[in-house]
Length: 285
Length: 323
Image 1 (cartoon, rainbow over the protein chains, first blue to last red):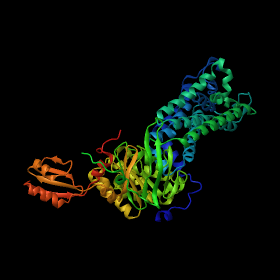
Image 2: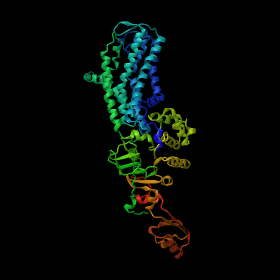
Image 3: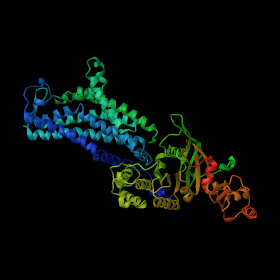
Image 4: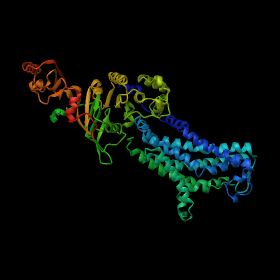
């Protein structure tokens, strides 16, 4: 029984080692780094394109929101970029990381070795989801940060004119931008929960990623069909652009809060589904 | 050649009160309806090296997956180290090292980083001793020199060694090793055998699954034989060998005459060699009969039954894949 004595009688009540290891796996992975690089390239492309061609006209002429405000204030590079990555690039990156989470370990066979360590299935799922959440946060903040820095370098910065027409100091504008980035990251948490669930269903990470990405696009397509207006409020992508309300004075909280509540509902439902699937499935890969 | 064996002789009773692994009617039926494991009662005694034998597809790995809680049995129950599974998994599994159906690691991480990943997942592992334990495990399986190579560059044998190293990151009471010498060269196979022997000498119970009879024969104290999802026999090596009588083997220049004079059932002729199961005949009398008949005998040996004979007798077939 010598083995018993050499092991701590109880496991550490809280250990962040596994989470840190998971974050290392997510962020050291070349593919995930490339996805972040692509996201960071968006503000660069937008800023340089605007700098070189200086668009004329108004938003009525088309193009993403805030685009025509950039020449007046560099902070709008960040806001334009967040708007541009929101429909596809960002969901795609999240779909890759969340879809990979459980299915990736299953396809390699490392899932069975984690389980016999032992890692409880609930803990494994929690750590995997936490890893995806941190990736959402980093992705949104990265786009905002690169946009802010580049905007400040290439364009004038100063007091920001909000959507409601009033003007706030640049520093307040930055705080609003941070809120917008956090809101965008929070919106991705819903998609990450869906991806996590899909990832528990299959041993093919590619299938899980593709399914999650397709769901993100489908949600937006359904949301854009006028005949399906009744469905809109139930779609997780319906509230993604509500961050505009954070750029009013005073902040209009109703839209963003509704977005957060619906996202929370998605996290709860798909988190539970993922949990019930994960804790009962036969790991035979 | 077939030997029919009375059922009573095949089922060697093993009564182990304090067994490291016990199963009771453990059964797994997959969703397709295929019965992979048909209600087995396994008993792996404490401190034994238990050879879990059977052809590919006989249900060994499925049994091991159930033992470790990776898949749920359709019916039946089992204990590990005296505790009921899967309820006690959190307390028991830290004392169990396992290699299940081949090694599996992240291809882009080095061997060392892969072990660090496994260790980080273990809430009981002390991070302060992680580096020393990882190096120790790598050293023990002879991978120290390749520790910083990426896993994808590892040969099959190196991967197998890394899998065993992962099982040895902590002191264990029970090691479950599923085909640990797969892909190893003869030298590597010997090393693993020595390693298992060393661990057994320290008092670790080893459940060693294999489809290689010779591997099990050399290192195991106990054997359980799986065939088509059933545990057809289990017991000590001697008990199992005892279910088969010895064989007599003759080298002669006149095999045909030897076969006539031998007077034993089912003689097997292979060139100049004739062999047959001795049964209850005395070898001296067999030799006398041969000499009396004028058979030119160059060599006459009596060999105890090998595991292969036992296996053939139990399953009625060679050591091939079960359907």
